[in-house]
Length: 232
Length: 225
Image 1 (cartoon, rainbow over the protein chains, first blue to last red):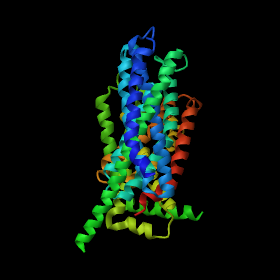
Image 2: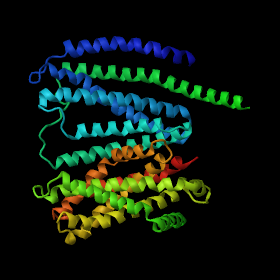
Image 3: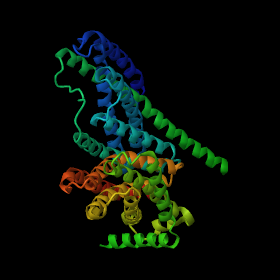
Image 4: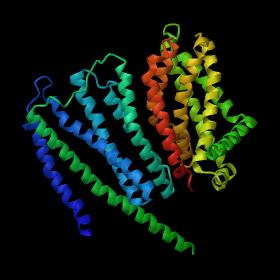
């Protein structure tokens, strides 16, 4: 078990490197150029997988938060925090690459369309989740507050999406988000491969971030013991 | 039944405390009045119809005022270690949550009851015939807002920079209920039948049910020492 723990942060990045090279080659050379949008469509291979992984990461935070409240084991809290942090990075990638694509294709950087607005709302929820952790000093309290927020945040996602879809639904739809249904088979295979690359990246970041979280807790514990000895 | 009775005791305690000083409600009232005045300068209501922008103006004002009530609600419990006393009393954390939520709800609804007629006067918009429908709309939306707000208020009162964290958390989580509130209020103010806002009522009611239950269940983890 310990061997796997030590090997994972070394082996995973190596696998990731190979996957990234193959993924980049696929996105830029293998995938055919889209007829109407041209090369700018290639951003899709970075944007959509990042979005899928961001949602997955926030889901992991929700589940780990629930497990923490149930089992009261700090490891679940460390996992929830790591996943929220990594998810926020992917969510940021989505929010940055989206407008880059939208500007030439839709003619506007941003539109308050359902999916965009939901992603932004998610980003805000998990950014405040991380802030709450920063501003709480007591470790147990930090874990409990974060777990409650992780659950509340996860419950909020479907309602946010539903409400924003209805909110936009009352107005004429000017721009439609691109659907994944009509993908060319070659594009599809590159796209699926890119999802695997991003999932590996997520796993990689988690494999690095979780031990850091555990080490932080260990150091905090040792500091406490030291402080107690000094007082005695 | 016992739970409700205990929640009512806490609710009445908070109301009595508020009645003696009127700290929360007076602050909320003057603050929201000021927000309304500023809105009057930012939008030219001789050009824009109040029916279109009014719901947004009202809800921004209500949410700002609500933040004041919610942050105050648990700060007063810090004085003289009152929270410790509440936790030591033979009361379920759920009852503390319900009592606190009811008192926050009462305060926010109280300010809304003062502000709605005042808005009608200040912005010259006849509202009297729409009051029953408006009351239903305000009730549903404020319940969800106060329900989540009480949980988050208890949480942020125990962090550093709680006054910054509360609005950040509350506004991001309350996005659905605020959209629903503005849409239902708009339907009422434009004089359309309430049936037009059916799906928004569903969103509002679902939000209320889900988050009041979730907050009730998780409250103990937030106030635990």
